[in-house]
Figure 1 (cartoon, rainbow, N blue to C red):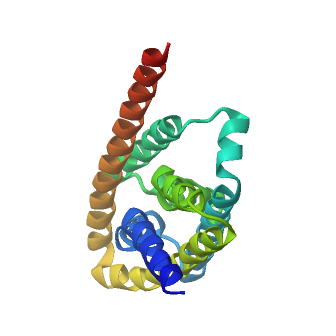
Figure 2 (figure 1 turned 30 degrees about the vertical axis):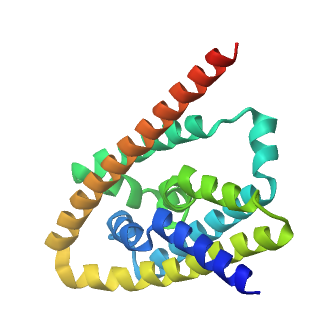
Length: 212
């Protein structure tokens, strides 16, 4: 029983460090600052539900999914990094309205799916963490992995909701500054993900070439 508790704490800590609810709350506020409270809750709920099912699926069937579609983690990191960088660049230039004013964004569509659910909440690092821990043991470890991510999703949801109230007190000017700052952070995250993907691809290539 003690081993399972230690395992649960270790998995939760790993998910928390990679998913970083505090940083993602600021990004969420920057993306949804022009929506009302109901719209923000809808987007937060949908994004976290999608992220949960993605991580649960990869915890259960990750290796099979990657093998079936011929997907590599470096490729996932490269695509995710490019996507996050583009969105961050637009926010850095004060173009957050492109996401928040579209019809799909208002009903919880585009923003909830991308960039919130994928790749920010259920990104390559989170997927890799889920696959890594779930592959270490049997159903007990898989169950703990999914349960710990579910707990983190609940914490993140409340962080999203209460984070918006702080930004509202900052006013329009504060929101604009926050949007641009989060755009910079997103751009940096995107570059970091892209570099990890490129390094991983090169490493895989060298490994493959050396084995021939």
